[in-house]
Image (cartoon, rainbow over all chains, first blue to last red; front, side, top):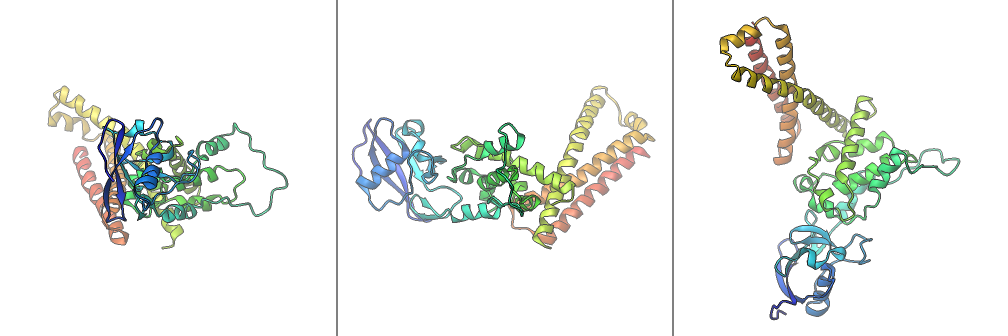
Length: 243
Length: 116
C-alpha cells in the first residue's frame, strides 16, 4: 500500500471510518495539473477500492466533492494539489460540522433540511401573475439575487462556520444566503413570513460576521453580506410590526 | 411562547442591542476624550466634581450612557452564555434582566454622586 516517497509522489493521509475512525496513509504519484479529487480517485481505483467519497460532475458545478483539505473546506475537483500540498503532503477528511457516513462521505441531510427550514423555496403569490414578471437587471433587488444565486450547495461554508459548530440549530450560511435571494425575488409571495423563519437564535441574528463563509466559498459568494441583509430586513419588519 | 413570538422577541432584542451600540459608540468616545482631557490637564477630583455638580447636561449625558450600557450588556452576555453554555430559557432571561438592573442601579448611583 505504501511505497518509497520521492519527489514525484505525494504522502496522503485520508480519514477512514466514521467519527471514531483514524487516518490512513497512502502514497500517490504526482501528476501535472492534478486535483485533490484526482488524488482521492487514484487511491480508490489503485490502492483501496473500499474508500468512500462523493463526486459527480468533476467541473465545479454539482457541489458534491467538498471535503477538508489540510484542515480547510474545499471543492476538491477544482483544487489543484500544487496549490494546497505542503511538503508534498495532503491530509483529507470529511467536511466539518456534518455527521460522517464513511471515510470522506458526510450525511448532508441536516444541511439541506435547514434550507427548507429557512424557507428556501420559491413561494408563489396567491393570484397567479397575468404575465411574465419583468425583472430589470439593474434593480437593487435583482443585483442582490444575482450576488447569491450561484450557490452550488457544496457545504463548504457550513463546514467553515464557527456558529454552526457552536449552535447545531443555526441554519448556516448557505440556507440563509438562499433565503436572502428569495427575499429579494420580486415574484416571491412569502413576505414577512419568510423573514420570521430566518430571524432569531437559529437564524441570521446568530451570525457574528466572522466571514469564514465568504473566505472559503468556492463560488466567491458572500453569505455574510446576505445574512447582514436579512438582519436589516428583519429589523425593518420588526420596527414596522410586520414580523 | 409560540415560535413566532420567540422570533419577534429575539429580533427586538437584536434591534435594541444595535440601537444601544450606536448610542454607546458616541458615549464611549466622548467619555474617553474626557478622561484624556482630565488627566492631561491635571484636573483634581475636586475640580472635576466642581464641573459636574449641578450640571444637568453631564447628568443627562451619563444617564444616557448608563441606560445604553444597561440595555446593551445584558443582551450580549445572554447571547454569549447561550452560545458557550447550555443555559437557556426563562432563568437565563431573568438573570439577564437582573444583570441589566444591577448595571443600571450602580451606574445611576455613580452618576448621581457626580451631580449632587
